[in-house]
Image (cartoon, rainbow, N blue to C red; front, top):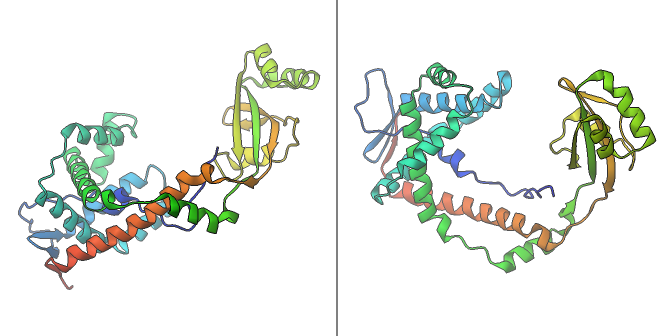
Length: 310
């Protein structure tokens, strides 16, 4: 079943908020400009550039052109504040003496590497952003350090009791509805000259599995919802069909698909057991956001923070 989304409760994504910033106490090169001092540590213009370059590389896997630049610009708005908070969190992790298993660093490194077609493509993408594999490993290691201290100082202290979940459900029952869905079967036809034969067979016997077996075609079933994972074209076709009817061939890439709506699932009210996990997550994320902000404010109060004026 399609997962229910949180209702206006902002999801705090720790990995994103903490970022992937290189922290080190090596001498500041002449071309660097110190833009902030956080206790006995500094943030330089290079730190800002490294962060943006890394995020550009990460985001380019999903966005491009103007959309990518808009994402980068949105990051820039509060970037220095984020870096200061990150530095405070990392300092707390080091004070606590937290050590990270290097196998975890290697595993996260592999996740990033797997997004690229080859070792050369990966290194080229890094070089374009002025980064090295060592830079990425440092960022991953420090990310894990920050996540660990946040787990100890914040996450482990958050409690959601069953009464809170039930209360939220009772107050928001009208929002917990399943969307209209379709149980859909499909056959994939890779040779266009087979289409007429397949359609003719379906007219005589609308059993999609039988047609697939007869012609050696790929057969699949799925549960589909509007605005979910279907492409706009396929969604329009599927949700335009009556129950028991099959579609005209739809070309997707180099193949043709024929869809049949086996059953229409009408919207209905969802029960508490069906949505309690989603409610728990929403309430937890809300408390997490508040608790993390409070903890960071406490760190700022007892820390020396000086931002360099232009």
